[in-house]
Amino acid sequence: MSTFSKKISRLSLLSLLSLMSLLSLLSLITHGCSGSYPIDEDGLLVTDRAECYVSNFELLGTDHLTVRVEGELPAIDTAAGTISIKAKFGTDLKHLYPQFSLVTDAKLEPKITGLTDFSDLERPRQYTVISGNRKVRKTYTIYVEVEHL
Amino acid sequence: MKSLSKKLPPLLLAFLLPLTSLTPSGCTEKDTEVALLKNDCLKRSVGPNVVGLDIEFAYAMATPYGAGRIVSACVEADIAGAPQTWLEHRYYHTDRETGADVGMTVGNPSVNDGNRTTVEFTVDTCAATLRYYYRIPEEARGKSVTFTFSATSSAGETVSMKMGPYAISKMDIKKNISARSAARFLSIEDMAVYSAADAAKIPEKIDLVYLRPDGSSPYYDLIGPAFVSPAADPQYRPGVTLPAGANNDTKIRKEYGVHDRHLATLDGPNAVSSGVFIDDVDFETIKLDDMPDYALGLRQYSCLWVETHDGRYRAFIYVSALNGEGVSSCTIHIKRLKIK
Picture (spheres, rainbow over the protein chains, first blue to last red):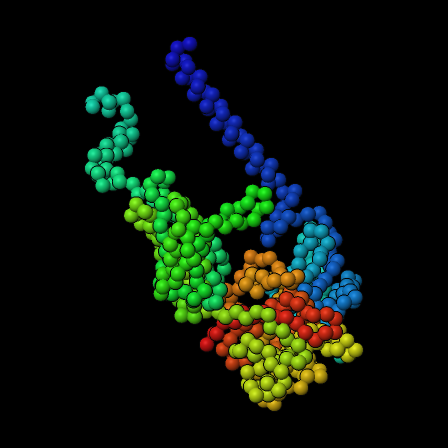
């Protein structure tokens, strides 16, 4: 084979490889965004799950330990949309971390970004659970009672 | 040269030509004299440098075998250390079987002379690593300290290296304070607890009251071991009579398990190994003005961020031990920074 032919065949091989890479990339793009599992505005996967509830709830103090009275579990009423919890005597309701356990794929609104003030007992805080498919919303009202002498 | 330039890519020539021009002028006769005595140093202690504690270094020096021996090592600090400052006159190696440090004496115990700490070698050795412990003096508080390590060989060579500057913290530390019913009135300014009789003499200095209701009391489970400010709601300090005039409203933020290494590194069963340090910046940035004036239900390893009523001091209190059920006693350790 002449030098010229060798160069031509090498060039063809390179072109073929480039074309294959481009096709693979195109295939990835078209199949990667098929829309089966879209992403929501928080970058979380939207799934098929329609379940929407709180499975557990805690209130933590600034020391990240529970302020709940020992042995008294929070009363979570999904039908009524209420969570009642009894906090220990002397709990500082102005500085608490709420901690929710949610059903799979659900998310919470508003987001918990730090210490939260639960001291306004007349206007208890509300949180909304949004299902995995983002179509079902359930609002819970948090009632905090502080242990007395 | 023309044929060479044809063969070599022009870019390569562009790199090579400046190098060839440097070679004859870059190496003078003086530069070829290589110092034989070498040294190196590393800082062994970590965390904030607090007055009363040590900054620790390991200083290594060596000269080739047959090129003389080391005759002295010296450290000069730009702020003289406290009298407890010293330079080891031993170097250490690890025993292969036991893993223990084994010291080998190389000289006389160090001598402090002003800012300088010196060890004169008494053995014929060409290498050693000596540890240096700089006890931070009161004069260094809030400043920075720089060290110059140097070594001299019998061949007349001297090497040196600078370490630092290292910032010295403004905070104070007080460890092993026992708060109990007989001495439950805590002053952050004094970093001490007082009995009721002594507290009555300085009520304006009392920032916190320690209490632990008796096991038979209805408050036993509700309140538990607690630190309460004198101005707090009296329901949080049942059975405690305050000294007349004690009315400071101290702000408290509860934490748990912040094992500050300076405070939690203790002798005995309550020692905790930790790499956490509370530093000046933590005191300066923490916001405590809207925190409550009491902390109930403390347990071992509870911690308290505290701000005094006048805002002059912020403190971090680490509870290392609560001594037995119903026994009104706890052991605390304090870091404190004067804010204004």
